[in-house]
Amino acid sequence: MTIATPTSPSHHAPAVTNRRTGAVHRWSETLIPTLREAPAEATTPSHVLLLRAGYIRQVAAGVYTFLPLAWRVLDKVTTIVREEMDAAGARQLHMPAFVPFELYKDTKRDEAYGDLLFRLKDRKGNDIALGPTHEETITDLVRQSITSYKQLPINLYQVQTKYRDEARPRAGLLRGREFVMKDAYSFHTSVDGPGGLGEAYDAMYQAYVNIFTRCGLSFTAVEAEAGPIGGSASHEFMVNAESGEDTILVCEASGYAANVEKAEIGERSWSFDGAPAAPLEKVHTPNLPGIDGVAQFLKTTPDGMLKTIVFEVLGPKPGAAPSGPQPKWLLACVRGDHEVNEGKVRDVSGWSIALADDKAARAAGFAIGYVSPLAATKVPGTLMLVDPDAAQGGIAWCTGSDEPDHHVRSFNWSREMGAVLSDAGRVSVADIRNAQAGDPSPRAKGSKLTTRRGIEVGHIFKLGTKYSEAMGLTVLDEKQQKRSVVMGCYGIGVSRTLAACVEMSHDAGGIVWPAAVAPYHVEIVVMKPDDETQSRHAREIAAALAERGADVLIDDRDERPGPKFKDADLIGIPVRLTLGDKALAEGCVEFKPRTDAGKGELVKLADVIDRCLAALG
Ligand code: ATP
Ligand code: MG
Image (cartoon, rainbow, N blue to C red; front, top):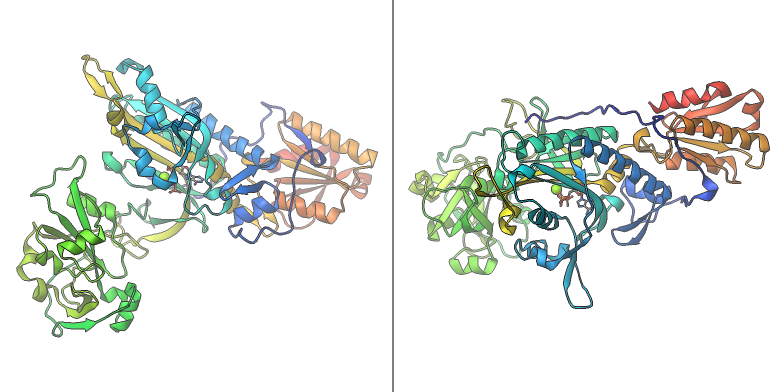
């Protein structure tokens, strides 16, 4: 699939339509508790601004109240999500936050989630989880309701509150412990062909592009972990923002984009050949935690070191047929400044793996913390994968010495390892590390990968039969044969998307909402709320705007103009109109789009509605 990277979002649905009458609300009747300064713990722009502008308040770590302004934005984002999901053929339902533990009996996900799962007991002692996601609940529903292939495909979604006891809730709505998610689940009899999973996946991909474009976001759809189906089976939608927690690798030349877990690296040359530069030298290196410390002590840098990680082999990777007998251990060797990518090690080797338990690995003969590639020849049943950047025979490497508290200098691949290096059953060279900026592109020869920060706002995933097999969801096919149903799942962080909009669109004065998700489209600042003429004009303009579908907030507070203008900038309504005596005496109001600096422009009363609507796009 080609990757859509709309960098300049277009609004292909108008923000304001006369399909509905807009709302007219008064500041004095709603709750917008703006603050001069945000609490010290808030540092990310959206967290700071949503607190300061009176959108959210923290109730507990990672748990927030959505005040009226935020609720309106959430409602608008939700409406966009619903319109696009409905148009893509998905149907809305609503499942409870409660997930009785019985539902996890077959999938054991209560164990997989561990501490992330909020657990409670009812008065009868039954265990209940607060749903972090709803695969089990929906699979159970469909298992009870659908028996024949004729009832498929079907795609069901909800917009609902999710609970995850995140280790580090952060940045306000970006990573909460209670948050709003749209989650959809599709059910099929096949992966390919009409009515298959692929078709629904592509429709969801397009719906996501539409949703995030309509929200005014600049985003990148990136390849993500493939899971059991393999190939291009999962994409994450990343908002391009510096404050994002995720790193995205991008090849500008080919449009390739992937997250760190998935990003492939283009071809790199390697060779174990090369004459030794000096005799192997053992060095006592006690109490040197971390590769940087060791490198410094050995008078080298991390890129002059080999790092060897020990994995335990659990069994064949699902769906893979690895050649040769099952090894017990798998060593992954990369350059000291690189990170081993577990998914790549698994995919390249064809074995399911887990980081070795320290105790078990030590008992088998691995000097954890001081393991060298030579350990592959010393511990029986060990397979080794070497990354091309580490497979360089011309370098005198520093590495562990397979003995606690000792390292070696001048490790030379062919001298130290000999014939084992050409035994394909024991040593192979492959891309097994995380990609980083400057690596060769996997799609365009001669181009390099660059990195970008991103906020994951959506994730689509071809699940395959993982849940249907575990939970016994089958249908009868044309030949009356029982078949496991093929599934996909599709999530959007709705509350995270709200925060991502603020991350993308703010300035020194406050939030700058794109019109499509702004809580109101126009804010009318009335200089003297007691003045009957000013109030009447405010009412009339607001009513005329509402008639044309715009939502209007009238700032009718008895406050000085300075703070009212400051607040208007802070809460970020796209258009500000100011009603004052001087302008009205000339038959005008002051018109100022939020994106314009300065005082604004005098516009004739007769023209003001059209000017507002034009500015809202
Ligand atoms: P992350 O990697 O950010 O923890 P995830 O991959 O675990 O997220 P999914 O299970 O894919 O999340 O959930 C679907 C969507 O829900 C994510 O793409 C994200 O937008 C949103 N989401 C997940 N966790 C949170 C959270 N703690 N707070 C707000 N939104 C979240
Ligand atoms: Mg995800």
